[in-house]
Image (cartoon, rainbow, N blue to C red; front, side):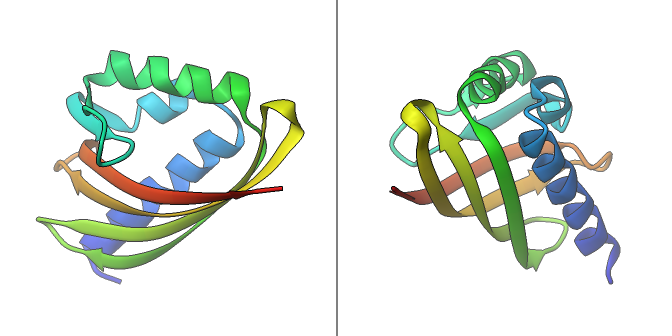
Length: 124
């Protein structure tokens, strides 16, 4: 496994662990101080670790029983792409399946400097 692939896998594993444990502090610690996080293509990206922490604090309050998985599609110095999936229970007890794609840039310390995602959900 290349160093870039190992670094990306490590980041995705930590992201999944933070989400599953609903740990906003651990989630936001994965981002560089001046990083951007664009949740969907039609919203303005969050800017900075503080904004990302606030976003993840809301996620931690509103989602339960999270199960996260990922498949690395591309991992190199310039670009990292992964397909991800998750199962969560959201308010009103809605069972939600999520399927999405991350496009991520990591710095030399393995912190995310830019994350863009596209996802879709199915709810029961």
